[in-house]
Length: 470
Image (cartoon, rainbow, N blue to C red; front, side):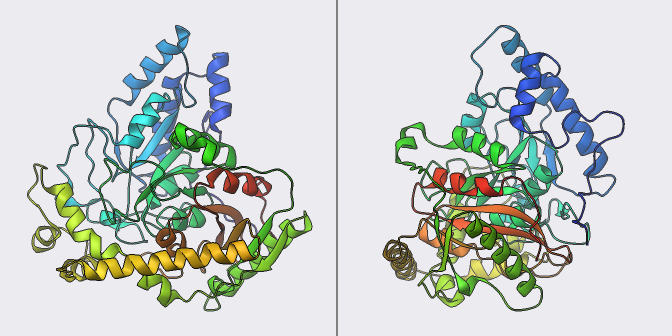
């Protein structure tokens, strides 16, 4: 079959932003053929036609009423010859668990609908300093606690290619918005796959950085140990630009690059599924890796047996979520102060409430259970790095998700995101097209700590976005 088509096509007559990359938009602004105000108006027009109307993708939760004013300021700066940052005049969307001054930050919960942070999150400050315009906020799975992107505040978000299927989550709104050209790029958050799953399901690029690479200050927490903020983009080039803005300049020297095409890649056979649609996805990923091998890479199975149960046992989220959320809500002028309040008030979406209740009931009075989980995570990280060292592997590779996006309302399974999360290592979901039956597929690459630029360098061979035949 032909590859599925995006539901949000170009607008009739003239659509100056659909599918255009950041560098191209900047060149047009420098030449005077587009302005930042033109870009904001064009993205708003696409959102109006495709997000709540048309295919009703429901990826944008709120728009910034000051976006045009911010764009006007950027245009004046350009006219005056001010020093321009890498994102000067570029409209960006933010996942709505990232604090943005002057706008609600709700984490998709009706209980937090009135939450208005006084300050920008650290990552928002960096984006603004680089000249970005905050266009608005994207939908997410409620409280970032799931992967189908449903919430009490926004309802369901739909896949950018199939309105009957989930977009993945919890950063599903950001992924759909990026795929649909609702902004030049978007920012998501990832705790155990929340950037990489929706990136795979919507054929965009999504990067989970090394744990602790930069501050998560101003992000509504799910698990402070595992939470991280990351870029999502339509192209490899756009992702590189976002990462250059997000990464700590003082950390650049640690971020190794390398020359040559002789990459050594280890595959994790346990992450290639065999149930339902999983074999088709597995074949597609292996075909992509075979193409890389034909270009000079060395591909071999990694000597690293990893059972799902071991990964789950190293996931500390359940022992951190309730207390971290309570600390976040403590000083907010809201009708709730805790996860218990949210549940008892009937705020949670019915599909989200069972997991929230499970996490609210989990108790660890002396902190011993949490420490045991963290110890298992450290051992797992050591095992991963030892296996990579012993086989002299540059990266590990496997499907971002083992199977297909499910129909709306069904539970999603098959994510492989926990490995990067619990080890704290960086991972990149690379869009590699669709299977013959139309399943979107992402190839996940995992590297060593502070190896984001190495991941991006390795992934350049996939930047054409060509579908791999299987």
